[in-house]
Length: 249
Ligand SMILES: NC(=O)c1ccc[n+]([C@@H]2O[C@H](COP(=O)([O-])OP(=O)(O)OC[C@H]3O[C@@H](n4cnc5c(N)ncnc54)[C@H](OP(=O)(O)O)[C@@H]3O)[C@@H](O)[C@H]2O)c1
Image (cartoon, rainbow, N blue to C red; front, side, top):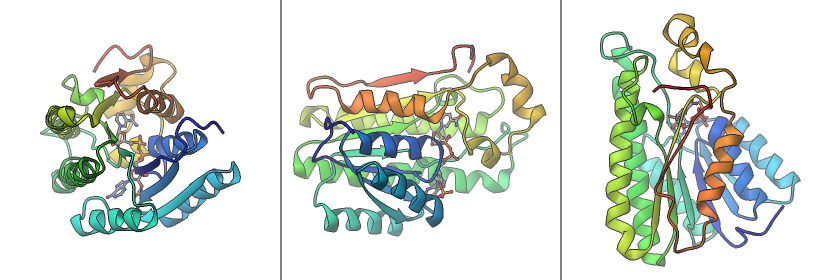
């Protein structure tokens, strides 16, 4: 454990697996008290236990970030338990294989409810709280598919384009108040993401086989820890991180 983030409170959505879990563990290892949010109770409990074993403080909250009332409940719990929110990691999200023609249209609404509307509602509420307390960091998980147009996940990519533009607009809105908003855009990270998105050999794995070693969630967690531990006068506005062999998107 280090103490860089001692006395800071962090909220990490999507903390039951992949990037969110790794970020929660990393921030706790640097001294932050961490709220871990996701829908599945058991993996959240396990992540919180791992943090507690290394001497950190973690509080799991079971909530669905695509539902406004659950976002409000989640933030009410944070307010009650700590009264502060220093770092918000807006990470919960899901993928969807295919473009406009080939993606499963029955999943479009749910994708926008979570990746765009849920994320934006969470950002708005965290930002309001941070304005009140005069400081804070918001880190938003975009994607390289929201940086370049993706040939194999174009519809999912559209949610990340929307999210990145909301994040940048929020950054401009909050800069005069010295509240930092950063967007992290990873390339392919090995996690539960690929299975949830419905990727298979034909629509994904054949294309990425030439990338070589993929990113691991810890690689992204290290990048996010770097962002939130910069001195207050520095903002890492946007960080694109890819497997070294990923040429595109
Ligand atoms: N993996 C990649 O290649 C990649 C690349 C670029 C960007 N990203 C972005 O990075 C973020 C994390 O992805 P990941 O790779 O870590 O995927 P992951 O392993 O599938 O993790 C997604 C997390 O989001 C949570 N989640 C899903 N729906 C939710 C909901 N409605 N409410 C609350 N939590 C919800 C999941 O937990 P529950 O199922 O327990 O709710 C899980 O903890 C996503 O925003 C993704 O778009 C991923």
